Image (cartoon, rainbow, N blue to C red; front, side, top):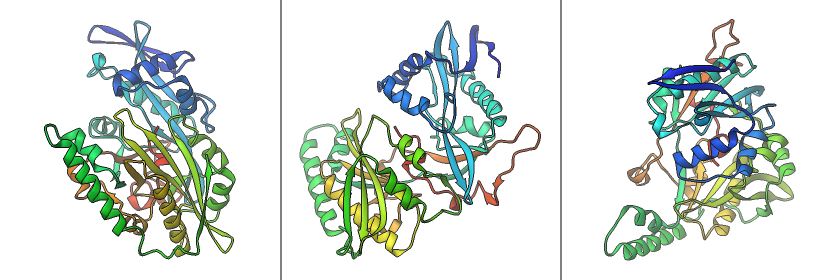
Length: 378
């Protein structure tokens, strides 16, 4: 794609691919848009170190030599019916507030999609919110399914304090925390027999163990290819502290999870069960996931909330340990997340794109298995 210059509302904008040095403009725009300052180490991990492309997958809009819009992507090697497929996920959609409403988002996204249609990319997926979703749909993306998350709220008082002002807030928050603690004591995995399951915790990402387990079972639909490169890149973000938990019985590994923790800008401490290996399995696999979950919770008493992606985490385990979906009461009453999984196949420029790949429909929500690893999380 060549560099293009267009005039919008009397101002000249240049649209082009990422160039070295744009990271400073990206990080400034990120802080303006999201109110958080990220560093160059984070940028390098997120975009430069991606193992699946030999370039930074980002398109920018600039005016007067300043970056005012960006269209970045994550690249993934996915497995579709067990077959490899290069895919992109849109992340960090940003246009500076002073330059919105001028079509920068549409131009950057359309030019990037045209570019990647010639680069052997099979499809693009994302989980946009209500603000950006209409823009993607106007470019041909189709909705698949709302994005839902399991949350085990351990300190609801933190969230009450954000929403309730006035006298008595602190007392109300303490009372809510006590009620939550009592509820979780009563629902702590009573339905799972894990006495014979041993769980070992390894700081960081135990790549070899995770790859070995991931190779045991292959999800027949659409999910990331969980090879060594995937684990070593995707879970190297400097924003999180990570540990790997492996559950074993009679010397045989049943399942493993990656748990990670960070404290947000609002002061909320979040622990995520970010990924499960293998991604699917039988009863012993679920027992292994249950045992790992129990250990993660025991190690995360300091966390305000423990979360897991509903598309990849077994519902039976979630219910047994006090997790609730954020699209159902009571959590839906205060939920702010409104992401929806959307997808767009890319043609090769000569034939129209197909919504079916290797016999798998891209539009059927049952065909997608995504953890936090495939979501736009820091």
